[in-house]
Amino acid sequence: VQGFARAKMPRRALDLLAEMRLRGVRPDGETYATAIEACSLAPKDRATTLAMKLLEEASESGVHVGSESYEAIMRMHLRRFEWRPALDVFDRLGASQAPPSGA
Image 1: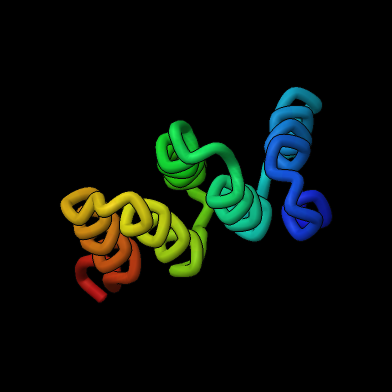
Image 2: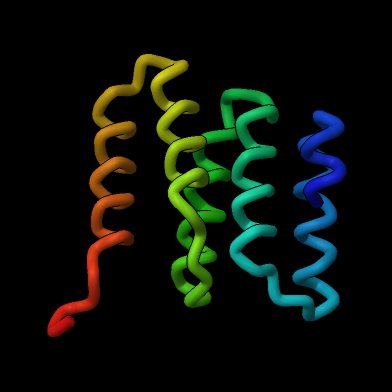
């Protein structure tokens, strides 16, 4: 996935992620992060939605993605002057980095 993303081939990177899932390979945080970053190279009309879907999928799977993924999604929103969604992602980043309750 990372190789395709670095080669600026986002569609191939995302197709490979889909194939991994079909074959039962569970993506790790780095794979999700790379796929989210690849979304920033994809056509803008669907890129942000797809990146958010991947972030949700990682979260639901219990996979931690680093702040870079949130930052990539915020940049996608900001390039389109979508301030409110960018702030929502920023708030989610803060919540994901918060220590567990009772810690």
